[in-house]
Length: 68
Image (cartoon, rainbow, N blue to C red):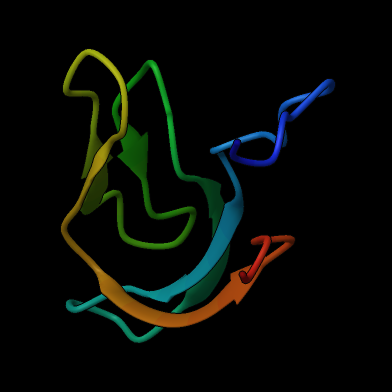
């Protein structure tokens, strides 16, 4: 039998991204439920897609992601 997972690990995480327009670095949530905009130039960095967000910026680093 396979391994039973009693407490499931979260599938969401935070991502450090770089704005393609101004180069500002910002941390966003992988499953954002609203449009995420750059704090500096107001460029859209991520759009909600009903679950995992569509990240439009350059991903620099994954934060808190569980690696198997």
